[in-house]
Image 1: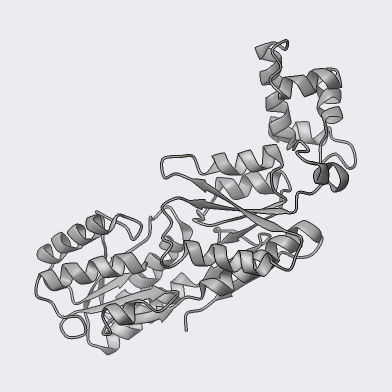
Image 2: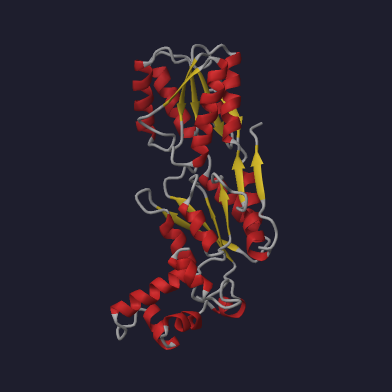
Length: 341
């Protein structure tokens, strides 16, 4: 048992869900006004005391009341969508946000967007929301197999839902596109077209859906006699020029490549341009397979093989899932895994 777990065992009935200033004062041995002033960074409170109180508040999962609504009801009626600034709005980010907001229009809840940067700790915005009580629930994506954000929220009983899955998500609200099935369907498509050497432009491999995609493509590729190589010098999240240059260099080293599987629309465009720069023709001596959430690639190159992903469905489901996590935490978490098709 960790020290934090021991601390939370000291909570009285009702405090585990919502520790208060009195909770911190009782456990720390300080007066309630001292705790309040320490959390407010009052100049007459010593730095050691401030540090002690803040650490205790964080460990207990204390969330200050920030508005009159919260004082009256204990709720903010806010759902926070935590999303990285570089998320591809062409195929995912913007459509996901729109779908969530649309689903919540007829409820008391409204949406705030909490962005974070690629060089920032992804846990930082989650910790901020929980510590400040600025939302009642969180929706987030870019899920890792053992995601520290998920662990943090579960330890604090803070409502959330995720777009994607962890390696063990039996008790977690989620919506996910079956990227393993996407890998299998892609191999089946190119097998029927007689392809034998495929390049996969995958998402960053620290993300669970990337690992599922790569594992399936390699497994079914081996069974079908198709060599599958993963682009190592760029991911589907990289800048368009970087993907194009990396794909071009790869194709020069491996001219036998006759198929490319892409995990994003921008990566697909970059891969197509790289292929054509070498005189390859999409649909003739090169197949390119991509997933997308709205029609775009057909107008770019009608020969690209497309597998659909419904981001609107994902957003709508996640909105309902996080509301249930807030209002009915006693119910089993809402979960949905959809296959390409």
